[in-house]
Amino acid sequence: MDVNLALSPQAIGFARLDSKARVLAQAGQLLSDAYGLVPGEVLENLEAREALGSTGFGRGVAIPHCRSKDIRRPSLAVLRLEAPIDFGAADARPVTLVFALVSPENAGATHLHALAAISRLTRDETMLQMLADAPDAEAIYALLTNQFVRDAA
Image 1: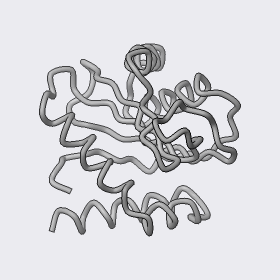
Image 2: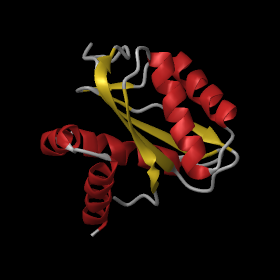
Image 3: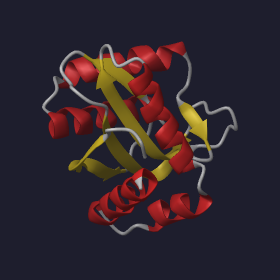
Image 4: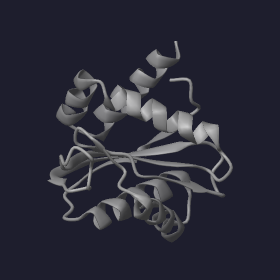
């Protein structure tokens, strides 16, 4: 990956949630806790972006994203859902894997590059299956950091 993307082990979680709104709230909480952001502000920003159109990417993946004045580089949280949630994706498939991204307010192309890198990662069927089969957050962290390092090489 050619993006300077932060991924903290504390930004990976598993959850059983019953709505898109709760998924966004949990993703916002992961981002806030891992990167020292204001929880309500992150959630508001994620919800405002989602109001523009679904971030359901397809293939069971959602990539909710927003910007914040309180962050210096694109930062990622990953949430694996124990039960699928309707996210309004174009392919109508419910979501089980959420990559929540927060980028600096004026990131411009950097934000788009981070989204593109996540998109490329989630188009890899083998990677999606490994993420779905990962037993815990540590395994997901290892898979993602190994993938990002390999992409940068």
